[in-house]
Image (tube, rainbow, N blue to C red):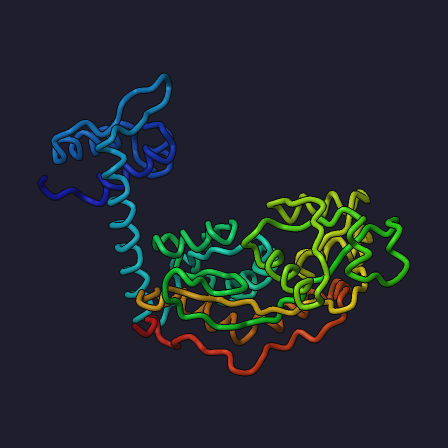
Length: 331
């Protein structure tokens, strides 16, 4: 297989993404014949067909599926090289590839706004998913940084705490329990709405009941914070969720915190990257920004909206590690 050009690799990636030569041409700002030529030359280099017509769409063959994965990695490395060259010139730019568990998606927008306002050349690629999904993305190098409560055990990471993570019970203002305090035992008959096993809030509520030596009776198990909040706001149960995730609903009066002994439960938010993997300068800069300013931004957002329902101190614990100030992580 003889060498291919970056344009040829880009053509394959864009055709795979859009399933169309014309839309790939639009994305690359070239003509359709140019994309077709790049694909034809790449097929000659591979010695196998890379695409096939499927109705109105273009589908990849087995060889195309194999090659597009390598093409994406090669293009990403080349883009990273450009970012590092820019960093040598004193310019922080490039693509910030970051993944976050669903509970953390409410935290990131204000921090990304603050960070990018000082780094206008930075592009954001944010992916949100379950904890296993985010761990998978980090392990496959699809993201440079991950945001979650507890670092994974599957492989070594360099993790830094950047904020406290309060979790509490929530009910609709019309709920029978809304006017006073409740015990853990009293919640058993009120359809307790929780996240799926493995999520941070699920682990926290299981630990809360275990430490209180109280039986945990789960009413409904959902894999979406939004679904839990909507059901709770409709009066269909009691939710156990992140305070950060419910700030808007509390501010607008759709939900309110339910005082329960032993709550709020406090955890830590971590930003992390693979311990044995160098990260781009832009990722290292955002890592450092989160450790230095993450708690301040989060607290400001909650207080600004009048939505600190748990009334807890969220100052970060001492002992948080700091990321490397240079563009490379320690090996």
